[in-house]
Image (cartoon, rainbow, N blue to C red):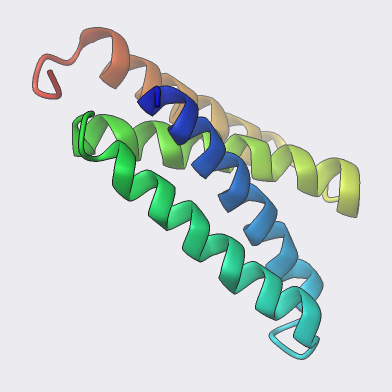
Length: 109
């Protein structure tokens, strides 16, 4: 299977699991807690498969960067958590970093 599709699936699962942690209320609600842990396990399994064919640094930069952006978007729409200017600047820097790694770095090839 295409490693980029697996990485996309892993990122999507990680975002779902992270937002389930919010719903778990500090692990006090069993269903979101157990769901988050199981979905994290599946996400890590998928990313471990991706590591077979793509460089660790590249995969982890994309996984983290895209995961942060998507998690912030879900938090905005699902939980009404708005970002202030420093938070948006930080996310812009994360996006910039992921782009620099993917577009210009030769250490990950």
